[in-house]
Length: 172
Image (tube, rainbow, N blue to C red; front, side, top):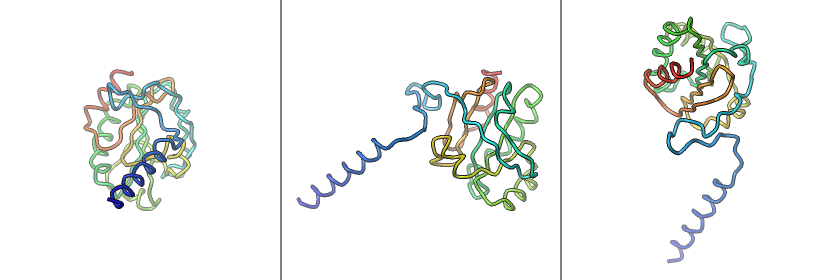
């Protein structure tokens, strides 16, 4: 009985600490688990790309941006990349910009991007960048940013190409 009481109190304490912890992550709408409850300005960043050039999010204003946090060792991330390549090829001229934010070692990312034929900018993200987006709790985590620079969708985990294609078409 004492073990059960102790376990219950411990779980209650953990739940309370987690629930009351501060987080910059946006609240997600209950009717659509992927829409943010209220669009918010995407935090700007300047990161070094794998080509050595700076990638600044604000320079993409006026375009619909898909910002994908990923890593080379992540199977769901690897599964999404081929259709991000397709989407960039298909809709890049129509105002879509995909940015890969790799949470991985520079040389691994360079090799991976070359092997996969990635045709969009890949930035070397860091913990600070992830924190400004509310902390990345799992990868892939993908943000859809409208032409005005507001985050309107957030996806954690794998999503099929059609999801991102529909988001772009709705926002273009």
